Length: 414
Ligand code: AMP
Ligand code: MG
Image (cartoon, rainbow, N blue to C red; front, side):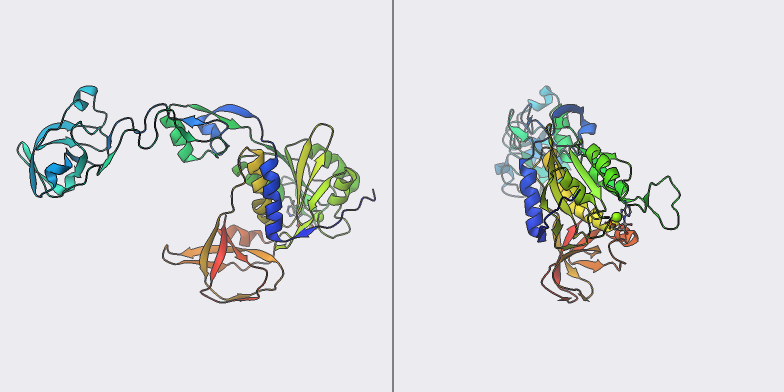
């Protein structure tokens, strides 16, 4: 073998930036038409255009009375009620014209009749026979959304490259599209390594542990719009690794866990180097996840990016979110999305060592007035229990040791 890999240890932000740049240039998977609910979570590969004006008529946003604003300038005002207009009103009903000193009873979602230019909420009115007493004045346009004011017929409502969520799904439904074009889910090969690692359906011997990383990664890949392919666990042995790495490189992206640290049997990088892989970085100044590796392997047919993620289960999860997720965005046809950072007050003081950007399992608590973050006690980056109790990571900057209660800290939402 004998191939050497020069070490490239980057700061967190340099490593993240490098992945984002790479992710912005990779070619996206091909497009396919899918039924609306199968497209949820995938990236739009076409423009969604308004098939008619939105809204298609001037729409009342309240139950109340459609009026000419000038008629209710002085309150209370008494107007003659000439009609009732329900949501879904037919052309006949909507051909009503509201004249001076007249109004029409109207429901939310119904077309505002000609002549009227505002709606007074029913709460501010009183019925009196044929008339209505209005206690509040309104400005022209109040409680009315004008025809085409959200989108004109033919206008782009959603551009390609946007990840489909419930809102995009609603727009597709609203423009009459039961099927939409989205990018195919990138295929992501997942290769766990380690002589001590056995699959979930085997009974581990006392010195063995079950493979949880392949499953946590597959779950993260699914949520990120990818299609996971779990490979058999590789032994810490060059030939077995080579065979399975070659298989994994047939996918759109290869994720390897374990075997990238400094141990004598951490052979992943050496074997990849023997395939003439390029390494963009071989470590990031973060905890957990410092040994994370990012590179690509070129063959005659294709280029396959790969990540070597550290084997400790929490390191695997964190490095997926920090580095793999943006590349999956790129492969899926979207721009890499920014990490969901937020801020919260630290619940209790703590100390740490400088030099690494830390992502510590934590809980976001408190109210909308005062969000607070509490670090979860953990036994280090193998502690799945601690990770399972977290709903965010506390992001600890690399240059300080001591943090006091009440300080505003950055958190990374899960
Ligand atoms: P490594 O990165 O190979 O040095 O592994 C670091 C730690 O993570 C060791 O304690 C491994 O036993 C554990 N580990 C490695 N791979 C897995 C896996 N697939 N599932 C669960 N734990 C793992
Ligand atoms: Mg190992």
